[in-house]
Image (cartoon, rainbow, N blue to C red):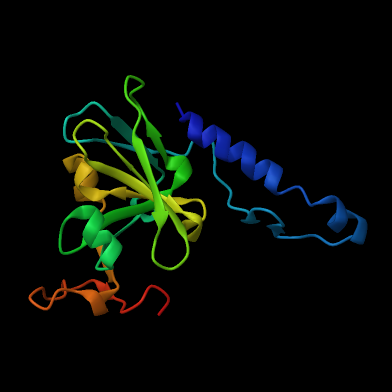
Length: 190
């Protein structure tokens, strides 16, 4: 049985493929919807992979619903903000579509911290108010994507979604070498 997310994506795709009123009046056929960009067809019977995760104390749990591992990208980030948030030499997150993530517990909601990311963009970070585990982050810079804290994912997800790259390598700690086999970017827009 397809997930609710897949049904919604199929409906969104159908709506997105309808040309806007202005383009119909001009007689042009667009491969893109003006508000959502390229139209991607998702089929109702498309299999999905469900991965789970939770904060350290387990009071907040979540689910990732991905069509394939290619829908996600795990990366190490050496920026100063990630170092502070993770309390480590780097941050490790998995970028995925916002629609692929959902909280599965209703007894506790995450606490949200909002602050400038140092480049004038408001960044939202969600964490457990009980144990303090970071869960995810998002902001205008990410569009319709979120960044899930890698260490909160269960082992099956971590195995399926290994790191693919490193960002802000110019801020990498001098004692920490690059991870072999991953792409390296000194800046985010390199």
